[in-house]
Length: 208
Length: 390
Image (cartoon, rainbow over all chains, first blue to last red; front, side, top):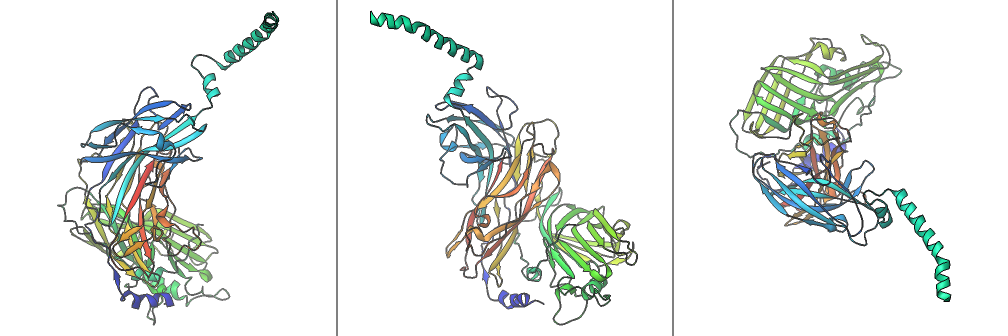
C-alpha cells in the first residue's frame, strides 16, 4: 500500500464537511426548443445573421416551444460573445454586463411562461449604434430556466447566436437594391466628366 | 494503441466512495427509468489478478514488471478496497484488489430488463509473457432475465507466447462474459444487482487470454435510479421527420446535490453526477452547436469555496447526434500560476461540428469538488450555468 493511501484512513475519521443534503433532482427535466421565425429575413434559418450599417434598426422574431410536460418559465436576455473559427459564438461568462451586441438589443418580452406544448414568439430589435465599428459583432439571444435549488442550482440556458456584420457606409451604398456596382462606377465617371466639361464655362462666367 | 495513464490515486479513490443521497420517494414501477450513478464491483478473474499482480512466473532476462505497473486502473475505474485480495500479503498491495467501475448511465425497465454502462479501464501488463490486456467500458445488460457483461477488450501481444500469436486482439462493445444467475433488488431509487456463475463468452475469448467457458469472478453493482420517465412526455428525441428546424434540449434536473464532502489528505472531496443534457438539432444544414458550463463561487455561512475547486469529467451517454465530449477539467486546489480556474470559467461539456449526424446527443459526466483542507465545515451553495449555443 502506498504511503498516501495509508494516510487517508485516519484523516477520513477526522471530520466531515456538511454540504446540505437536498432531495436529489427533485424536478423533472425542463425541455424546450428555439428557432428563428420565418419572415423577411428568410426561412429555415440556422440562427440570426445580419448585414447592417451603423444606425440601422433590425427587427426579428425567435420562436420558443415548451417540449416538456410541465409549465416552463423562461427569462429572456441578450449575451455578448465572440465568433470562433468554426462559426460558433463563444459567449461571455454568465452574468457579465452587456457591453457589445447585447447592449444593442431591445426585447419585446423579458420573461415568458409556456404551458406544455405551447409555443410563443419573442420579438427583438437590434439598434446598431451610429458609431458602431465595421466588422463582425457577435452575441446571442438567451432563454434561461432557473429554479432556485438548495446546493448547486442549475441555470439552463438555450442560446441562439446572433452575428451582425456592420458594413462600411460606402459598401452599403454600392449594395443598394437593384443597382449593380458597375452602374455606380459609371455614374461616378459621368459626374466627373460633367464637372470637367463645365469648368471652363464656370470660369468664363466668373470672369464675367 | 491508446496510452492509458496510470492512476496513482486509485487506491485513495476507493476510500472516498461517496454516498449520494437520493431521498426522492419511490415512484411505482411502470415505465423506464434512467440510471443516474453507481458503481460496478468486479475483479475480472481472481487467479489472473494473482498471476499478473505477483508475476512469480516471470521469465528472465525481462523479469517481472515493477510493482505498481503490473495492474493499473484509469478513467473512472479504481481498486476496490473492500474487495477480496487475490493473494494474502500484509499490507495488501492494491494490485491484489478487484475493481470499482463508475456507473455513468443506463436505463431500467424492470428487474428482468435493464442496462447499465460504466466507465474506466483496467490494464494488465506482463512484459516477460509478452502481453498487455486492457478491459474497459463495461456494461451489464439484462434482457428477459438473461444477463451478460459487455465491454471493450484490447490485447497486444508483442511476441508469440502460449496460445497467442504476436498481434493486436480487439473486441469493441462485445460480450465478455455470460452471467449464470443474477439477483436484482430495487428499493425506492436504489438498485442493487449481484451476478454469479460468469463464464467467458466466445466473443470475449477471441481477445482474452482465457478460453471460452472459463469461469470469471462474480460481480455486484449498486446504482441510483432517476424518476420514472413519463411515456407521455414529448421529448426532443428521435423523430427524423418532420423537420422542425429547431435547436432543442432537455436538462434532467434543476439542481445538483454534492452530498457530504469527505476529508482526504488533499482536502475535502465530493463528487456527483452531472444532470443529463440531451441536445436535438434539427436545423437545416446541421450547423455546429456547443454546450458549455461554468459555476459561481460556492457561498456559505462559514465562508466561500472558490469556483476553481470544482472540476468535471464529461462523458458521452450515447453516440447519437455526432457529438463529442469536452475535456476533463481537474478541480484546482491552489492557483499559484493563475491558470487553474477549474469550472470558474466556461468549459465545454460537449459539442457537434457543422454537418453533424442527425439524432439526439446525450451528455453527462461527473462533477468533482476538491476544497482546501482549511475550508470551514458548513453549507455551501452556488449556481452552475449550463448553456447550449447554436
